[in-house]
Length: 380
Image (cartoon, one colour):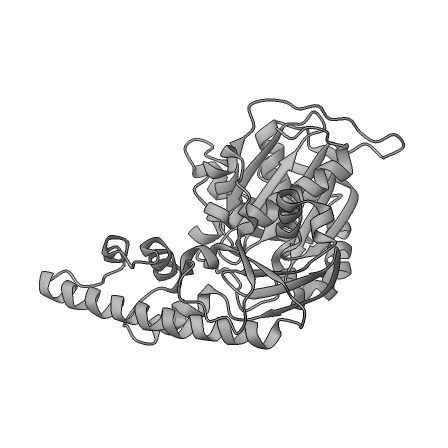
């Protein structure tokens, strides 16, 4: 977890209900990205593994009892609601949970939100009873379920169990926006609102589980769509041509290998111990990645050609998969002005997390949410 070391000038709007903690969350397929802050301007960011798994209460209590040292809160998070305990993040991965890529994000979002609140509470040593304001993003294909998610959160947030006792949280407000909303906000910061009101901008978010597109027609968000063409499809294409690989570990290795497919990260997932067999396996893996990348680029380019609406003048490409694919090899049917991650540099606090531009969307949502809740006048 990373935090800002300094305060900034922040006041609460007159007449607005008191909020003790504001939180922005992106339910990414490879990481849950979270930014939270206090009324005095302090904020911090944390990333959690995407896994969620149901465990017994006895197992959760035994884990707490048998663990030497406390460790980081985001590595030992679990929540109990409706008499069921769910481990979230790294702890869920330890209990062999999966990332739920086959399920709607709404299915697991409640557990992730509650766990995130507890993690931030531990970070700032808040009491177990306080008020929050929540902002989150969902893929365009699931955006219609935003009211359902809000209802589910508000039904349980007032009373749930955690490793440090019962949390009694009052939800002052809950807002949900489509993925890419934060990136659009960052693009506005970079170019100015007057600029956006004169152009038609497409935000193309290439994520781990899915890819989405949101079009802003002269300052007004008019349409958004999503597809299953996330980075995971590239990983699965590779797995079709190699033997015995774990999806999560292979995906991480492919991402670390980067555009040039550096061998060193891939060596970590090789199965053979014999030197000659390892060389053959590595060669086969590199060829499979190169082929899968080429096929995936064609799929993404075709999807964009089919999906981009008439009149789009510029495209903002963003998301971790956009970072991985790089700027070469795109097949555009016409000439667009292309911006990579809105050309906005993230704060050094977020850069230090080593996640590149994967934090951009949640950062944009946080900036918008923070100012809406706290009347933020100066961002730390």
